[in-house]
Length: 97
Image (cartoon, rainbow, N blue to C red; front, side):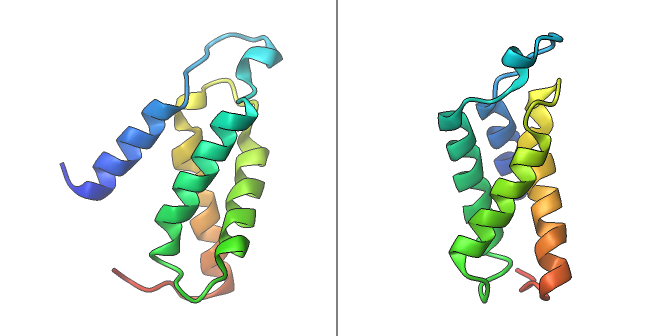
């Protein structure tokens, strides 16, 4: 398994999976949020070296907040990374590593 796939798999396992309809069970706690946002932001910085780290973290946080509360939480980190990269790509060209 290549490193990128392994990273995504490891990150998706860090967020608990909840399959209930209760909103309080589907919202990710602040410490979990911070962990996911930090991990995704660090990963994305490799592709956008000219962007300010604080801006990348803000974009990732915004994308996370848009998805927080989703019923199936296991996919949130991957979706956050995808959406944040799309947003940043719209602002600037990434470095292809």
